[in-house]
Image (cartoon, rainbow, N blue to C red; front, side):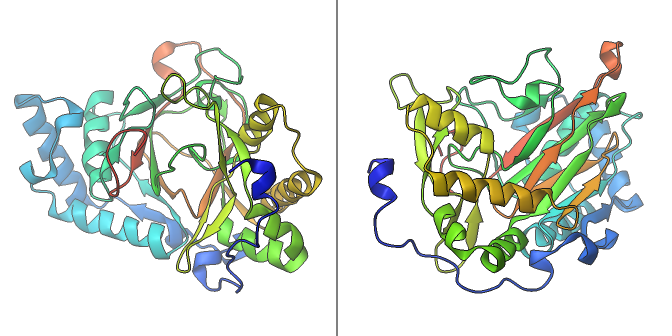
Length: 331
């Protein structure tokens, strides 16, 4: 269905109630214990033993299998993380792996196994990449250049809204920047509540579709954009996806200006996410791992200044986690 036709169909199914409790948090209701998960000594001992085995029995990281290792304490820790993602505040930070004690490749191997305890790692680019390096390549954001390959500010977004977004995403911090690179997170269920309170008519527009730029991540000959709404409700769970730049470029690529209601609704959504009372700010440290429920929370990153020494430069590793569908990028 063409976007212009989809905008004038019968009203979409919407979540008509206010979401209450810690699922829909605002900054003043968020406590450190809601999102910070300490890596206990029992887990660190298991991790050290695993790395010792790995050094004697090397295997590619993406071939590592949980069944081959005894990680009972780590599994208990990651069960808590998953509970936070699913029914808690929607984001968690593991604090932390000893970044100065192990090689980058060893930390990444640990990250792979810990993440696999949440859900199955899946491809996050069309070429099948399972572990994605987030660092500054010296490029600038463009139609086919992702912001995570630059040092520029990344405004509020969920990951891969133009495709089949995974429910869970992770970021392992191997190195931090010289300055900047501050992380922000906002709960989209709380944002939905605020949209309903302020402007219910504009909220309804966010349940209708927009064009999304696919950033070239598709088979040759496929459409360069796809069509999706910001919010979708299946009768059970509210799912959100947002990335203002991808929507703006998507409409430009299709030579179809965004309708006024669509543009106003999107601007209002971003005004709410930008409200300091709605979002939470924190600085990630080397060795920490951030996990987000990608359907419940949006995130942002400030711009940053990096070190000249290549080994000190900001370096994160991203992972996508999803149990349903195929492991391939298209799902």
